[in-house]
Length: 230
Image 1 (tube, rainbow, N blue to C red):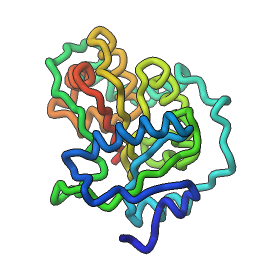
Image 2 (image 1 turned 90 degrees about the vertical axis):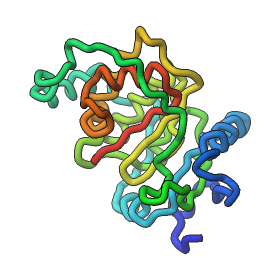
Image 3 (image 1 turned 60 degrees about the vertical axis):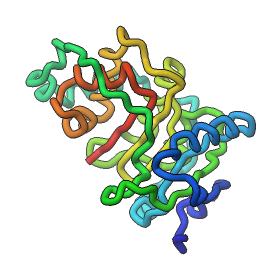
Image 4 (image 1 turned 30 degrees about the vertical axis):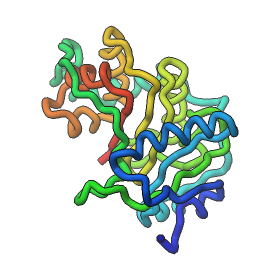
């Protein structure tokens, strides 16, 4: 096990993920832990014990948080749409044809990129029963095109209240959410628009076609959402 531990750095209760948990059953392990968290007032979050994330967090200032006073999500999305105006005009953003979609129901951000095996991870008990407060308590965001952590919290609050989406895993550049069920197909286009504005790389680098329509199709059949900021 790593001498340096992100759980110790955060100061929250945590457990190492047992050796019997593998890439194949990590998602079910998380869902079981999520049920335990609901009974005990915390949100479990999987975090690899990697130095890059810990070094990053050491550079962030976390002077407290206020989960009740968050940015307005509609204003956030309007500002992001303006930021990506040129890219939107060159894409199928305004004329979207949903694909059938590829189902995603597995957490993957904690897997070793080369081997596909589960990396050493802890599951941190983030002390809140409000899932959207996770990026405020585990400082995350504010680099490159990644929104600031209070903007992430605002968007997660909207998605939790609408779809039950809960942050399940954080690395130095990825965020994964789990949902109780896939979103209705007739809402997938609107949601894919929000996902693109929240994380353009989710379309630009994480779809085969680079289109909103492909992402919308995927969201209509998936219970895990993946975001990566390059």
